[in-house]
Length: 517
Image (cartoon, rainbow, N blue to C red):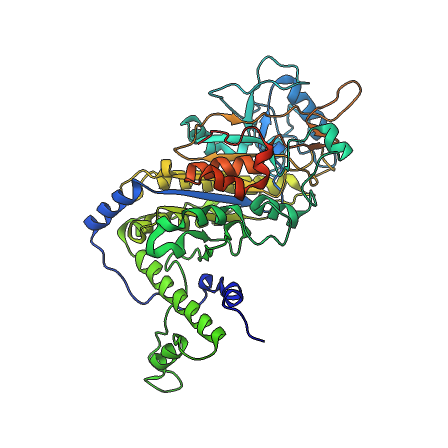
């Protein structure tokens, strides 16, 4: 049976992203002055999105916290219990030395317990977030996890905002509607694989195209001859970057080269001096009568040539000037270690710097950090992970401040995402799968020091208290992923009509642009 050209292309569309062998074999040798001029030209019309995906479901209840008395009391009642309580310490609580008794809890502090970390970190809002129904407070006050201290200066400088209670939604959904199942709900809520896919692609596991890739599809014509570098992942295959036309490009986090695929460079093959060159000719041969073979060879040639182009651009001065992130101290073990999330963002910064020679106008990037499924030992796990997130985002913000002599922070918007948040109550020493979550948006174009959306009422139903935002111990999102993504897409330059196609559920929401960028 003959295979149609369209089918062959679909089978082979990912092969340009393969990047697994060899080392770079040539360099551009660009002059620094020419590099600076090109960078200035590109920076005037360049924008990039960076998605930091936290695989496993980050407990955002211990990431961004409401500290008004009413909210804090309900938080404390829900989490200061169990075999290993996960409630963080109130604002202003000093660090309790390991082995000492905490004046707040009366428990002995360990390196992996909140008593040893000090109080949560208050942040000042430029615009007050309304006090929601069911909360007895005159003003909503907010704080961050103690291990997100590196984000506080970025917040204070106005380059960081919070999207509150975000999650996949098909339409606005109330507590009563959720309980009665009287409105359509996303498929397989609280399933890791399905909700990872729903966040990235708007559909459960098996979705083939994500909204990052579909956005770049709309902007691909402006990216010139190097459009293959429009959607780049440092974290392997991600449906977020898959579009109809764009092919996600996967790179390594090795310092150099960016991609490890290149023509043969050996001097002999099976004792033959001409063997390597002949093998290269065979690999790159796009002739022949077999359609599949011709398409495959064309993709291989494309991969090899693209890798050479990217690796050559990594020799430019602005790229090599990107500093490596400093090591961090593991808060549980006390050992110094490399922060792999920061290393991924270092690679993204180098790719952004390389764009001065590549000439793209719009790019979308994907990085990730796993390990957030903290059903148990949440204290000793989430603290380490949030320490990495805070350090990595701060490092990235600092590096973007000087890319080839240009401050790129207003041209790059970074946001966090995760499968879902966790239950408001503890299961003894951890949390279980939930729904609505709080996320960060960072960049010079961000209207920072604000919470977008309503930070919800906290607390489980008890007695006469009925929480309008929570069913059982699960937050019902009030902001949809579609609204979040459409706002980012509009900033990137995607048209309103295209956004309605990329996010079909967006039409169900009155506010389609949240105006945080």
